[in-house]
Length: 333
Image (tube, rainbow, N blue to C red; front, side, top):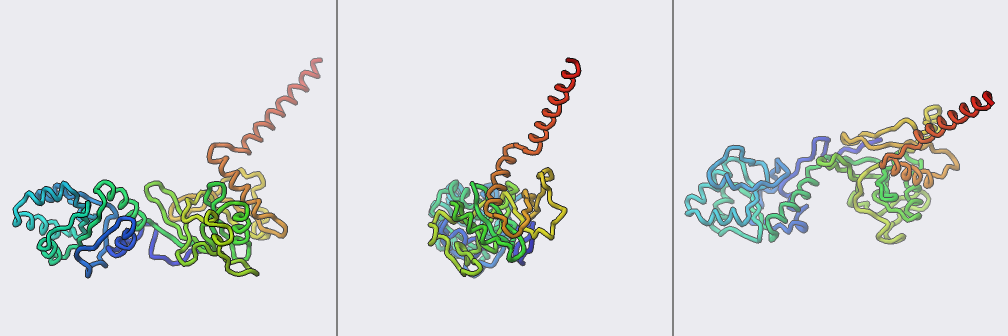
């Protein structure tokens, strides 16, 4: 499998305040209050922190690298302080490297407080969401921004609810197979290039199309086709978990290496995650659409613990035992 250079690696991506604003502008309804000239600063920890104890002057274990969340409780406490004490507490947090503050419930500090924090180098943002709601939504946005990612040569489809990444050398029929699956009622995720992100918490991979090519396919001899226009919007998925990697290889490349009974399980490791892998030999006349569809159904049975090799082996042993018992009975008779 060929990898394209990306800004990410298996340890995760770094991102800036500008990235956070862009990713959360609509979903989090973020409004920049101050610090527009500091949007290139890096957010070191992709998580929110409510600085309750820090506002009281206790800074041991202060999570300065996180997004500082200022909700109703924090606002009420700051308002209870006299102006000099309030400004001192704000300065002490910023002096300890905290710089990104998000005010929930649509609250915006007074112009004097904004000017004070701005001069100290802070970035102030406001959102109309309640604190609890914003924290939940922000966790997803921050997690997506910081997730390890990769861009891979391969076509991805959803078949029977399973995300399938089809890889192989050019000219082996990856796009044509995906098109055949779409015509059978399944859905396209990405053609030719698949963008992959890792959900670190669940140790799972999710694939999607690059923004510029989402919904489009290139079919040799036909050209560029737009899948939603031809088959409807339900024929495309924005993102899908990768649960199976199907590798196309020419028959002469793996002659003698084919596992005819499927006893040996294979895995592809992407961004440190092992994904079940099936190698399908490609030769003239093989129905790749049918084979991929069958591979998915087989994998779904594996997910629930069904093992056809063990079942067949058990049946053969039982049959052999029955034949042996029959021969013994015939001898005694």
